[in-house]
Image 1 (cartoon, helix red, strand yellow):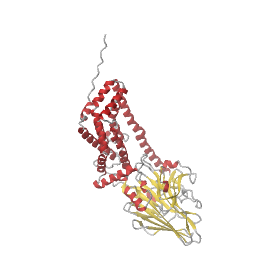
Image 2 (tube, rainbow, N blue to C red):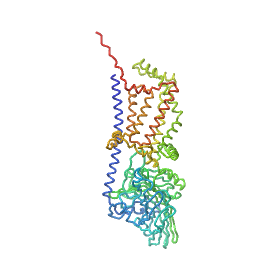
Image 3 (cartoon, helix red, strand yellow):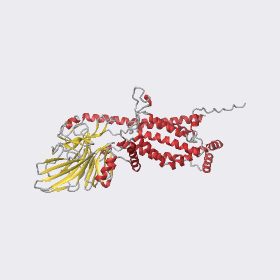
Image 4 (spheres, helix red, strand yellow):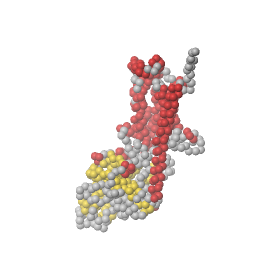
Length: 617
């Protein structure tokens, strides 16, 4: 009896340690990290002023190339932060109007620095503000794309202060925009901007030499972001600078990682460069949104990720620069580059990769190491979503199909578990027969397993199979924008967010908001109940401590999954339900009594107290 109490205390202590450890070391620090990041960003915005500068150095040039930096990404000296509307008003602008995008092109600098997404809002309410992706210098969070030329002895080249002349008033699909600038030293620059009906801009830059001497120019494009944004901080998600750089493949640098790179091009700049690569892209990605500069896929270029400290501001930049092009008197040269600025929709990204030949553009979405599972998982979910019109229903259908796919392995496992249940009386007899002789107990158990053809570890297979599927679904729900704000039924209006209900306020009946660090909604509770029922259908582990720990596992998992995306919890609860049904049928087919109700009722029965015989004499 004393040992049972001790084991129970140990089991409870271990369960509480897991639960409290999760909240203390993972959940709470994550919330605090996001809060501190938001405070730092707010403080930076309040105190930030933009210093004058010419720009950020590009990668070290090859022999014969100029060492001049890419033109400026900063505004004039002493310029204070103002509202986004005020910053937009500083420059004459050409409106951007497409089915997917709204915004404008700044004629001062020729930058694409004002983009919002028509189809995406900050909350599930369609009346909430649109997602703003790109913003101009002078605003609180400058984030923009710039294109142009660098070179030497060519006279003034277009930069962030250059005012271009436009031939139209709106940039829309089928209506390109032409910008021109004459530098007064013999060079005439022309830029033709085009945009499709989604998120891709095409930029054609041309230079006509009307002077008497040849010049050499190098085309460039860049995406620049001021200030470190607030990131989610999850290990399954990359946020920061990203690119595929020719044969060097995928490169991912978080904002903190970039800060650890060696000095590059100047004492206040750090970064990494890849020279003479062909194909790919460079850009900056958030969880659901991205901006990427895409060079001509058939020409060599140098790509770079850089971080520069300018006063209190960190400036992050992903840039590409092509090889030099000689412009003889009377000649014209050109370069075509692209800009992706929008939502990371899987089908859009895949279509751009295929139709435009952008090398590995699909890696803009963080499919992870298990992409061979996550990609097919998304495709299956997306197929049934278009069939049924509900991602939640799609999750239920895909889970059912996965159960059917793994049916042979699961059936074999459950049959082994049913046999374990059938021989449990013999196992109890062996333990009683050999008492404390653990070695003889194990030998007798092995002989029993061999005789009855039982694999004692076969019951682990369903769990082992479920782990990669669980992770793949978690990844898909977490990273793909298609799951963002996708409703299910009832109170679940966003499958990518946790269940909004909470037990602590009786699921909204009490008039106060439940704290986030202990979040326990209806679906996590349902998941815990299904997990508890599934465990009670299985034979208890021979070790009493293990048995008691398994009893508390559903409680621990209920709290742990309380903060997970609702779609993932729905999957887990549905999968458990299907497993219970499957296990019930197999146990009945094998003539094994389903003792679920006996096990449940046994939890409330008191064990008889063993009487200690009185001492004689």
